[in-house]
Image (tube, rainbow, N blue to C red; front, side, top):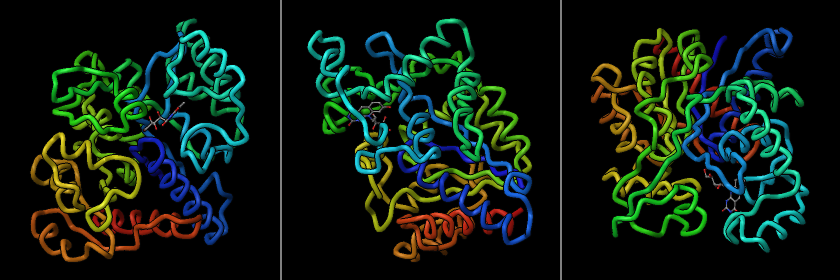
Length: 330
Ligand code: FO1
């Protein structure tokens, strides 16, 4: 089965690990060799990306790369395990990186390799392929677009700052009135993203931040049309449980665009494919089961399932629930 997931970084990575684990267990149950049974592609958000100290930083890609190669720092949610910061101290001494954004020594290896290739004219999708080729990730990562579409945040006092400053320096504490992806008007979905969407048997929206993680992916001209014209059913998973974000600061982002931090409100934000939106189905937490009937009647068939991803078992179970709903709708 060909499964394509649209994903951001931290929350998305945990879900993508679950999809990979579900696929491994499903293949084993069928007595099939693992890589023959399922083809998992991830369309990765590039809106978090930015230039720092002359290096191209790509947080969502790198969170997925490190999680899938089991070398991510689970506590921080970003960067690599067993990291050191000798070079970072030097960079900060010279003021080429701010004290609120740390580039670890091992992490710098990825940034320098990526930047070197980009400066040679290597397409971002090829950079993804080369970086991932070192480890058996079990999935294929493709950028939503090859074009730089950095997210910028419009704050209430009229400033326009890069998402990374708003998120890591100010922890999303500055009230925002909107988000803009500079350059997105001239962007287009990457060839890998189009192929992953058109060829999928199942399309999944990871429980990522709907505004700053999936928003930039969906903002790429042609992306929504690709999703709506795909033959595969599209199922989304709520990033919110019981009115609270599972992690991160999606509530600050949702408030900025006037969407309630609520599983049903986010489903309506994505919209039903039958009503010019994207969703064929929606998974929300058992804690939000009261919203199932209303959403289903609104054209978004919804199921309440355990949504907490605590380990391989719960993550694989959630992925299985998402695939099951998609196949039920297919
Ligand atoms: N997040 C932080 O809160 N502080 C940091 O110093 C920091 C450094 C960093 C370096 C590389 C990288 O890929 C990500 C990094 N992040 C850091 C995480 C990142 O800025 C955001 O958490 C994500 O972009 C949110 O999706």
